[in-house]
Structure formats: structure tokens, C-alpha cells
Length: 171
Ligand SMILES: [Zn+2]
Image (cartoon, rainbow, N blue to C red; front, side):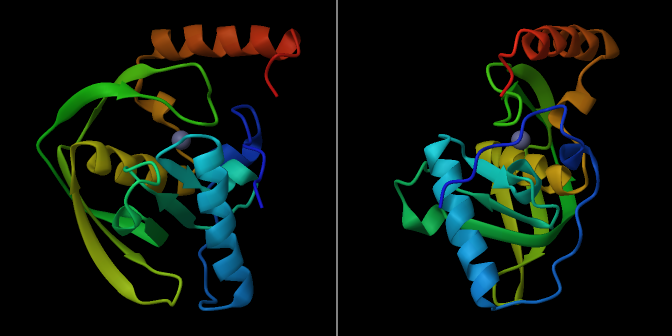
């Protein structure tokens, strides 16, 4: 099932999600499947549960856009363990469509998380994967990438979004 993507302005995006405590349940497996489906439908490389209105600590990532099944990644209750180096590049978010801004992130990032069976694992990613790991983990803490922009840039963006909302063009 494809969920509609929640857009900036909905408070679910800006509060910390709840930890997942029950693993290997039919509901959890279904949620993982639906999240991948929703992410591919929206043409994203990552999706966090709050973005479909579910305030739980689970995110999916696939930097291959569905090309390589080995790149499918499920992160439950993720924590950033390490961030090394830096990269500056354009970043966007499915919940803030049409906007993209330069954001500085670690070049190489290590995250510890659980899979849908509850097994703990660590993953280290570089470049786009490093960016996705941090972006999605931060979503689950209620933190959007725009919190990394200057106040001026963020205010300009919010003003444009408010106008789109007023014009009924913001979902
Ligand atoms: Zn996002």
C-alpha cells in the first residue's frame, strides 16, 4: 500500500518518534513493505515513518532507487555512532517537495540500528548513503534538514511554503 507523504507543517514531522519494541510481527513486516512501496512511488532514496504520519522509529533507505535489492536498508531505533569528514551537497526531503538546499554532512557515517527481526547491526556509509543515514535518523528525532540552514534561508523557505499553503498548493 502506498501512503500519502506528510508535508512540512504537520507536527508529526517535528516531534521525536516512539521506539519500536515489538519485532518480527506481521504488522511490522507489512509496514516495512509499505514504506518501501511508498518511497519508490514518491521517487525518494529514504523515507521515515513520521513522513507517512506514523510516529515510530523506523526508516527505509535505498540509494539505488530500486535497482539493487542489496541496497535496501531498514533502520529501526537507529543511533548515529560516528561521523567523519565532511561533504557539502544539495539535499531535499519528500516532505518539503520542490525545495533543495546545500547542507553540510559527515562524509562517512556509522549508524547502529535494529532490523525487523530485532537484530542489532551497524552500517557505515559514505557520500549519498552517509547523507541518507543521517537525514533519516534525524527525521526520527523530529529534526528536519532545514534546521541545518541559516536562519535567513530557513525563514525565506518557510515564507514560500506558507504562501503555497495559503494558495492551497501544499497538499
Ligand atoms: Zn526527509
